[in-house]
Image (cartoon, rainbow, N blue to C red; front, side, top):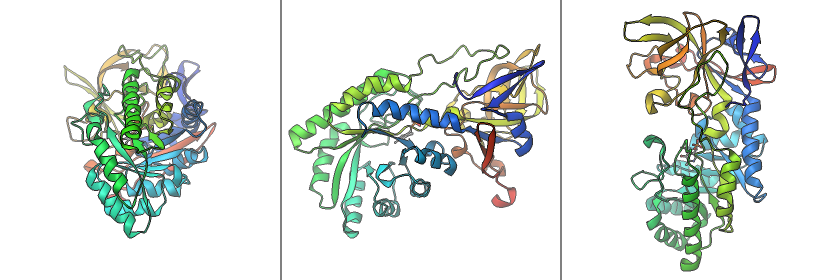
Length: 432
Ligand SMILES: Cc1ncc(COP(=O)(O)O)c(C=O)c1O
């Protein structure tokens, strides 16, 4: 996120962190903390860059947004106005995508455990395709479509057994993962689909994992899918029209923002691929299939548009560790606890001459696993200071919970020098 819409503005003696033209300290004082803030310009820039890059190969190719990454309706409306499609994984995500104006003909429904009600809703909504993940599901779609007297449009989610070389919890394309149908069993699945009276075969779907930094992984998956599509046509005489190539593009969590007063992370991930790198490598392979193509990224569209603002409640030291205890915890942002994910954490205000310290940044939740950073070098902060946890637009608010009966944060959208609340802070009375 080095060239993003978040930057420090230098004032006399100190620097203040801004989102576009709005001071984050001003938002913290107006709306309280913890507080999710998103940059409209960053979100739109990410979407437009990927969409332009993918549509170079054909105007029919497009980007769908994986709603699971962040389902705030205002963000969805912005993406809908840009012509984004949507990848949804529940009936509720489908409902919100439709309500926010996403074209049903650009919506696909993924996930290994769709209920009959969700499938009925998807079929009645006339979406582009249901991405079927098992033979049983294929038969259920056929039965429900039959009752509705329609043909159910499907892609089969094929699991190509490609190692995404990412965290095991976000790797989805290996044979031991629960997703999709193994590529070796997929010809049979298409043969069955082809024989079912109420199924319309649209195409093929694959998604091998998230936060992928290795280009060869995407190429391997693309080659394997295209080989399969060609084989299906030649040997089974089943022609596919469409490939949904999934998401998974990584984002830069390390050194998301740079400033001479901030320590640089030595683990900086230099391998982050640009949208252009990915499409240049993958689209020529996918286009050999003769299919139209969509991708369904979540993280790379929304992650670096968002930050989580939190206040330092206390600092303490036990001789072995220095703790910075803040008012945001694993209930607001679970990624560090769940995947040991790294998020850069920076003060909203940087003072010249401030010294550095090695600290654990921890939340208020009564769990040892409630940490946002461990053994992290950062500028010394004290009670009442504010911090920004960077690059938290994806898989942040959507994974928040009410654990310890804590209310969920508010969400703010910044556009230039204006801003608006896009989700009110939850009230304790709403949850008890
Ligand atoms: C089927 C599917 N498509 C797309 C995505 C979005 O992935 P990412 O946010 O890594 O781009 C996911 C996320 O896990 C997914 O499961």
